[in-house]
Amino acid sequence: MYDALKPQNMQRKAWNSLVRAWENGLSNREASLLVMRECNIYITGKAIETICEENPEIAMLRASLLDGLVTQAKMNVAQKLKEGDIVTSKWYLEKKKASEFSSKGSQAFEKGVDDLSLEEKQRQMAKEMMRYES
Image 1 (cartoon, rainbow, N blue to C red):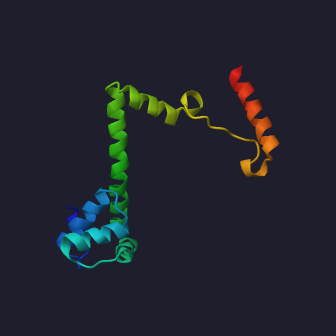
Image 2: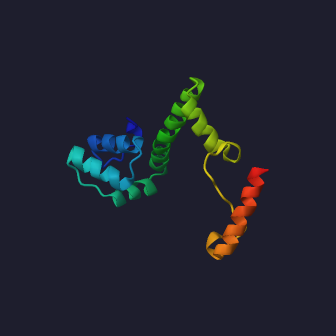
Image 3: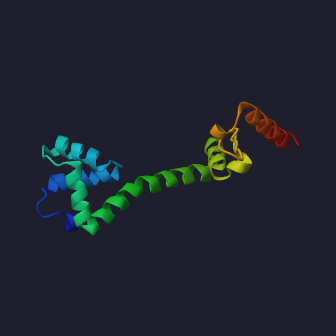
């Protein structure tokens, strides 16, 4: 698979393992371990990085394959939403419309929390509680 991009000095079985590693979201270091385990061929994560640096087409393939998992996850969420899954719907709204649907007590302070004294933190919290109660 993706044979046209395979480096000439790389064995086909190592290339196929490398591509499969990227399809499954593995880093170059993790991919090197997979190639070594599956093919008994020694390759380092740094060597894979060098291959990508020297071959922009391979770098683009790697990036596309790594993004494939994100794409699949989005498709899975979309499918669950279309099926009417309530748990996924609530989760999605909490992530996409947090200001309206968040169940977490997220708190934004005017200053960084570390910069506030205990009294200032308490005043700020009371001010925020008043805002939510009204």
